[in-house]
Image (cartoon, rainbow, N blue to C red; front, side, top):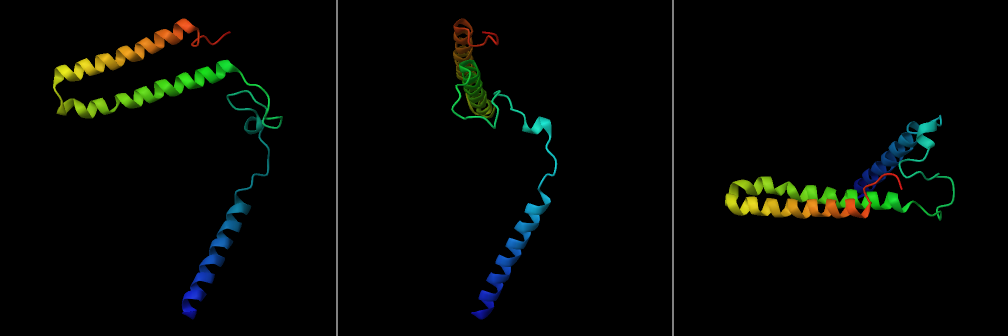
Length: 117
């Protein structure tokens, strides 16, 4: 039983030692201007987090997520292709792409795809 305690303490000390070494090694000693600048959304990371953000940026990100998920839903169709009837498979793909294109047309008419407002 004493041996189990000894090895437990030894493992704990080794883990703490490795974490301290990692912390010392991973510190960066210089500030890069590109790394400290705002990324993609245009916010200054050192200012107030309660500032209003661009609704256009939010809409573009939501549209990207929706169409990204739809593309992810298209991928299993390749696997199902060998196991299904070709006519029902083609009808399903055409219907899915029709809904996708209808969504793009709707977003285009609403003006959400315009980068300049």
